[in-house]
Length: 233
Image (cartoon, rainbow, N blue to C red):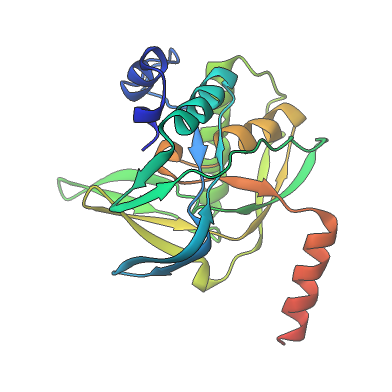
């Protein structure tokens, strides 16, 4: 979906994982799930009844501008088996960042380890209650920062789940493989440069497959969410 709308000089090296120089292929962009008049039906797909939107972010300005230009030029976008007309593209300013940021996931955050058990390799996913979840999110963020030359103080980045419920678990099928991820609200603490990177490149793994897009939860929206939660108790 993303690559075909980019200029070839950007899309091809990005697809091949060589746009940024790193030991492992790295694609520093992220996009959210569809939001708006859409309903997700586990195991069945999605039902779209009206206008929908998604968000895209990257620390590379040319990449974001190239995608916007491509979408406007083509005027249509195909997502899975659905065709959409592009009606509007808008840019969002990053919030003023300090060293604490509350975010919510607009697409599931996934982290995992590949383990070998009895001679067989298996993927172990972690949920936000596991200590490894935060450790792997931070390690992934540090790797992105290293590739981009973003400097931050060692040992000062932390991820804490604030509001994650069992219903926040998501199982997404990507090219025949089921991937486990989680949505909810999280507290990020660390240098502002790292928090900016979380917003621009996503949290966790598989960002270029649509995992880990997060946005700031503003204080007034957070208060309303807490009030709704209290009212349900």
